[in-house]
Every structure is written in structure tokens, then in C-alpha cells.
Length: 540
Ligand SMILES: Cc1ncc(C[n+]2csc(CCOP(=O)(O)OP(=O)(O)O)c2C)c(N)n1
Ligand SMILES: [Mg+2]
Figure (cartoon, rainbow, N blue to C red):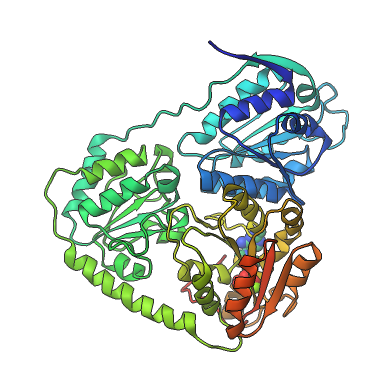
């Protein structure tokens, strides 16, 4: 028996959203979307509001990434939607199932110059899997359900709907959608068998696992495959923490040794993009395992590229019936490289330098972070160091902006993380430059009682740009910020608290106070502007 629902457009939308597991909205007020607020208000559906629409979309994306279910941002017509476009684009690059519902000027007088009248679709179409204007209230549940099904179907991604004023304000009725029913797509078994044979027959195989392994709920299958075939595993994005750091096959530091020595590189659930030298691993054969055919690389021809449900593919690898080469020596070789690199890192993380270097910040942070803490990176070099020195112990605990590399995710991601995990530590690692994009949203966090810890690596520069520009031109422009600025005072002024730390010895106490504070708390660490993250070539 199907259930019929009736009400205004906002109520019809909410019923469909709930059927799809959406549990809250992130928004910034605008009259065009009032019916969505009215429905939420009358049905005890949580509304979190922000000070810039980018934060609403980033918060929705954090919920989608951490909880593996759709995240919702509601944006008003025109500028509300355009302010959300970097968030949508990030979600598109990250395959995050985010739904943006936009208000829209009335259709009946379209073209007459209504307030905030613009057609959003041509702007959002290139960065969404689906974008549609819904012209009648009756049609809203169908459209919401179809959009969310699309968002949740691998390869996942954001979707957009907008509702002309008269559609969302008028009353209609429709069938209640049943909720998601996404059938897994099975990969071609021959291709999976080819991949399994290549890995089992390799002398020096390596696995690199990325975000889709987490999103596709394939973490256990990844571990089973790695263990069954004895393959060292490296991770990136939401894949970090898929194997606990103490697992004998979990590696992080020996990446260069691994990739230069490997004869088969297996990349699972992440594109062969700049983060993985575009899939160029010298003479090694590449196996690229993706969650949908659309994700196969167009710029190279891997030795095998099974596409389909990642859990199914990885489980098939774990159950590979054929013989296998012993990889024990290879694993041992990488382990000694890993241990040596870890010892070097440990020294750097303990170094008593003046000014403080980022490594020490992470050395101190590691002492106070719980295993299930959510850490969020928003910045340049300071976040590259976070990636290097922090070791997520569990999957689904590390949020970086992903390959779109958009600064400004910080407070939005923090809001989504706090809403997701009310009882865990949530810690944002921020460059001082990045802080400028979203720090005003500390006000939203304070007001809505969403405490988080913010650690700013305050080097007084756009470090990731200043150092490369100097290296390239011998000078730099547009790369300086006010040195030693009191970002902690900004947070205090907004109702939170914080302090500035200039000496390494004071870091531990400050971080402890931050996690105990119970309000948004910013630790403003004055770091060495001369410190540059070592990289061979970098144009960000
Ligand atoms: C929205 C956006 N604007 C500009 C950039 C280019 N960019 C990448 S890193 C970076 C510098 C970041 O500086 P900061 O946050 O202070 O971190 P630091 O490198 O100094 O540690 C810039 C400007 C970007 N990635 N995203
Ligand atoms: Mg900086």
C-alpha cells in the first residue's frame, strides 16, 4: 500500500527527504525557502543555520561523508545558490551525496525582473549529477526522491533542485516515496579475476585505497583482500584509517619506496589524479578498481580496471582461489622504511624550536586526540603537515577538502562533524589564510552550542603560495597576511574562547584547555614563516 501525503511544497519535500534518511538541514535564511523551514519547524526536523551559504553546503557535505547518507543544504534564490557553488563543486569532486534545494523566483512572472530572479541550472549543471526545476508542489516528492536516488548511486555526487515560489508555497498531494533502493552493480567477474591474478602473481604489489572504499562500505572487504593476498596498504582521503595504524599491512610513510619499487599498484576507490602522479608508477602495472564505469581513467590504460560494487570486488579478491607469490620480504622491506621514517617524524614532532614548527603542533595534538576524534584540514602547508603527522586510527574520522582543494571548508565541515558526533572530539586544523574564509561561522557554532577545537597554524602568510612563488620568481606578491594576528580574539568576540601560543612548551596545556572548554576554542599557534612543506613541484 502506498501512502499519500499532502501539504504545502515544503511539507511534501520534507516527507520525501525523511524517507531517504535526511535528518537535518543546513541553511541561511531567505524568504524563497520559508515553506521548507515551516515544515521542519512543525515536524521537529533540526535546522542549523550559518553565516555564509558555503558553510551550509560544506556542513551538508561533512554529514554525507561521515555518515554515508544524504546531506541537505537549503539555499535561497539567486545569491544564496551562487554562494553555495564552491561547496557543490567540492561535493562533486568528492562524490558526496549532497542535495541542495534552492528557492527560485516565481515562474508566473519569469522574465519580469523579480527579486533574485535567475536561472540556477546552467550554473550548477556542470557540478551536479542532476539539476532540475520543479514546477508544481505535487511533483516535489517525486523529484526529491529521484534526485536522492541519483546522488546515492555510485559514483555518488551532489544533486540540485529549485522550486519556483508558487510551487513551494502552494498546497499539493502526492505518493510518499518508498526510500532508497540502490542495487549494487556487479563488476565483470573476468576483469576481477584478471586483477586478482595480477596481484597474487606480483612480487611487490601495493594497494592505495581512497574515499570510495569508505563510502561504499568496503573497509572490511579491503582488509580481508589485503590480508588474504598479503599486500601493503596505503590510503588517502576518507580511506585514511581503513586499516588501523598498528595493522602489519598498514603503511603511510614508505610511500615513495613502495611506489618506486612496486611491480603492481592497485588503486581502489580513488581517481588516478595529481595526488597519485596521474597513475604513472614507472614500470609497475596499474590495477584501477572503481565503483562505476564512469570512473575509469581516460588518460591511461590500466592492466585491469574492474568497475562495480567495491565490497563485491574486494571480497572476490580476498577469495581468490589461485596460488600466490610470497610477499613477505617485500612487506618487511617496506616496514623497515616505514619504521625509519616514523623515527624521523617522531624527532620532528618533539623538536623544541623557536618559532614553533608545524610538526611539533601535531606531536602535541597526538597526545590529546582520542582514537575516534574527527580531524579536519583547511589550509595549505599546515594541512599538508597534518596529513603527514596525524594518523587517523579509524576510517571516517579525517576530512580534507579533496581534490578540488577549496579553502574555506573549515567551519562548515566542523558543524557537520559536530552534528554527526555530538560526543567526540572535533578538531579543525587551519591555516591563517584559510581561517579568513569561514571563521565568522564560529558565531553559528557558538549560538547553536556546537563546540569544536580550532588549531590555527599562524605563519602570517599564504605559505603554500608564498614559498613556491619565491622559488619561481625570486620574489612574491599577494602572499602576506598580518603577522601574529589574534585569531583567538576573533573567536572570543564571537562568544567562544581561545589563546595564542608562541612557545612549544605551552602547546600541550593550551590544547588540553581547548578540548575541555565546551565552547568553540581557537588555539592560535605562531608558527615559523620560513618553514615550507617539502615538495618537488607544486602549483596549487
Ligand atoms: C578558495 C581557494 N582560494 C585559493 C586557493 C589557493 N591556495 C591554496 S593553498 C593556499 C595558501 C593557504 O594559506 P594558509 O591557509 O595560511 O596555509 P599555509 O600554507 O600558510 O600553511 C592558497 C591561497 C585555494 N586552494 N582555494
Ligand atoms: Mg598561513
